Length: 187
Picture (cartoon, rainbow, N blue to C red):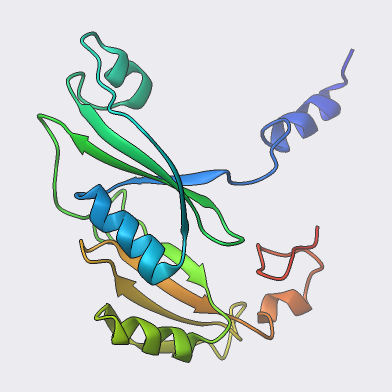
């Protein structure tokens, strides 16, 4: 029998067997354009495709929280170097919204890529006609000191970010715990 404190610790520690993020999934307006962008510009590797999927019952709404007549035209799986895998969807649905959420919108999001040299990465994106939002921000104080970042947009308006902190971040001086890091993590 488990004591109350053991039970509380088990619940507080999270999902049993959790190892990390397997993939990030997002819906795009044109799957071929998105795959080209992530492979040719970002440098991801395309793996395989699935679909189409649709249901004549309520499977789509029960399992995916989309309109029951939604059609998942195709899914593509990509790997992004040493980070997460991506699952790209192209849907067709009677109630589909086509506008991209902003970061300030509920459900707003962005996808951040770590790069070794942020200036070189920005120059690379500019040379490929990618829209960069503002200038590189350099953090000089607070727990993120040592980090540089800048937002950019995919051709369909998805918000993306470049991040770099080759010498680490200031918070690392105060704890042995680490957020994900491109050169490995510590517990």
